[in-house]
Image (cartoon, rainbow, N blue to C red; front, side, top):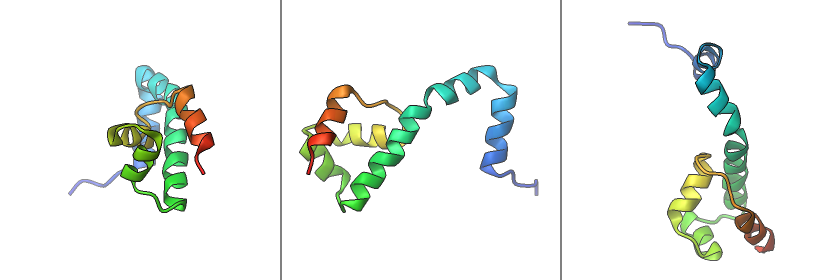
Length: 85
């Protein structure tokens, strides 16, 4: 059985060896950080993805996209989040 490699070690190997991957990783850092924050925000308020999507009048798929760090939020979304109580 081959030795298992920790995710952080594998990530570091890819960052060191693949300039394209490194650029994409750092370019998407803001979206990943926002995703972590949004999920924490939602969880602290005991909200489901569906409830947050409803409050923002968007589809649930967008909440999933933001929380996964796949998509950066728009200025409109940030403003809508600011206004949520």
